[in-house]
Amino acid sequence: MKRVLLSWSSGKDSAWTLHVLRQQPDVEVVGLLTTLNTEFDRVAMHSTRHSVLKAQAEVAGVPLWTVPLPWPCSNEIYEARMAEACRRAVDEGVDAIAFGDLFLADVRAYREERLKPTGLEPLFPLWGIPTDELSRTMIAGGLRAKLTCVDPKQLPASFAGRDFDALLLNDLPAGTDPCAERGEFHTCVYDGPMFAAPLRLQGGEVVHRDGFVFADFWEPANEVEKPAGAVMVPFRYGGFWDVPRSIVLRYRRKLLLLDSPFDDSLDEYPDIYTVYELSDAVVPSLAVGPWSFLGDTGLRILGTVEIKNVKFDPTKRARLDAMVLNPLLSE
Image (cartoon, rainbow, N blue to C red; front, top):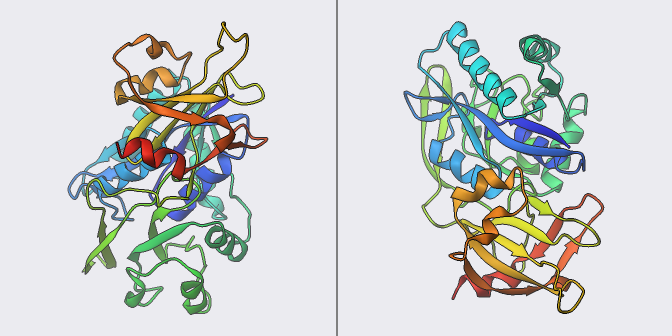
């Protein structure tokens, strides 16, 4: 299994890269690597709030790795901070860093050059896909995002705050890259197949600053909730055979374990999962297994779920109807 750290901007390309990587059975995404402007506590250029960034990581079910950067930030400081992050990655057994770059060869060459001394493999899962095709594939696949930053030298300021959707693609001026690979705009993803639940972003003011137009968005606390009947994607399996015996997932801001251990008295596996609520303190142990924290008698049992309600696919991932868990979490 290749352990991959994903360069995460909070935008559509990095989010779609996460979705693509999760289709590969030999890849495990172990972290989202993001640079934060410490002056404003926001993602550099995208201007996504730190609170929204953390909410994204939570519904993606992947730990967030933040790299703090001062403002202004010299290239020397940037490279030194990123080198620290790479050393941490190596120390924690990461094999590769994935990027959502699409076609800018100089950007790719720079990343490859900086990673070469570290031994970390650079991955570019979206590289070379025609951006008109890619943008429409993202939208058709359920990705939803807001334009948080616009370069008014390339795109009218009125695009700031709009949804990244088919209507926007049709409205883009001639010559604008539909994925904005040349920096025409930046986005913040609030829903998609890479998330267990959507973020309920609320729009704020639009400001002109440092030659760019920024649209502010925030996510009201404790309001991430998947509508009944929707689906979600667990992010960790254990003991996979015909079905996984253990699944860990995040849903409605809770970390849950669905566990179905072998029943010696029946001489077989039962047809139900017992659902436990876990604390975030067990997250590090999830990366190495087995489920050592199951010995903790203080685990809260929420109830049971019939295994027949979980659908599995060849990538050894699962889709679970939210209606199954909503009753347990409402008690």
